Length: 385
Image (cartoon, rainbow, N blue to C red):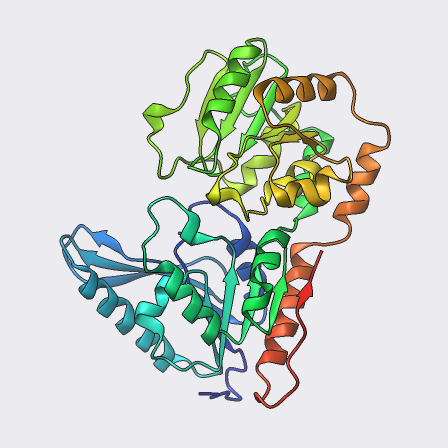
């Protein structure tokens, strides 16, 4: 394709995602807002049903050089119609591009409508092990194998996923969850208590993130029951589980979604961060962004034994690891009484090793290398920490 012009030197980055841009602010948003400093970024979501019954696409600007495309379909559209509509949108975007084009995949399912297009570069950011999630399509594993065959460069969202995937591609690189340290460090200076929690007693034990099958809701309920004097704060949207099935208690508060900008004020008025992830197939390879975010806010953290939390954070003594309700309660009690000596200084040394700015810079360099003629020497597998 390679159609760079003197009028518009920016390359085009088209992202095919299973995630909604405005759902929660996480890895894709961190990376792609930074990509927009040098690319024309077009983030294409999965289709939604349109109330007016017309096949269309909605476009939203989310900053300079960052556009969100939301395909819309009439109610009752079948899978073939949805794929045709997405194929048409992608074809139009590719035809309109005046520069080199990179297709960036977050889901291999997008191959069903995108595999016939030939961009200048194909990137697969393997953020999650989607085939392990509840109700994943049976075809997803086969499509991931195809995705790995087609991609020019592959990024993984954590060390456990990298270890499991390293042998499946010759240009694969590990980029664990990173941190916008300044954003969350603002919580350390004290911020006004948000109105929807300001009347609640202390101590407050809090979680923020998507509430889905990756959460051990029984553990949450058991901790709330064991310590009714603690206020358990749960921020985030619910997905793929019935909200009515969540445990209920006077000291257990399901607050709902909050914007990324609002999070530091909540964390500034909590006492301990809580990461009650279930240990199951859906969490086997996760690298939670909230681990460094809690730490940057100056909050001690108790987490279940997620591999990418245990190493490095648990091994370094920065996060307490607990497997049962009694272990969790004991760990929180210890942290409420006293943080380990030198803990915050050790946190800052660890967090100083990386940032989302550095992650994007390293990814962009690898993408530029992968854009070279295929006869060039390929980059080696790398793990970035």
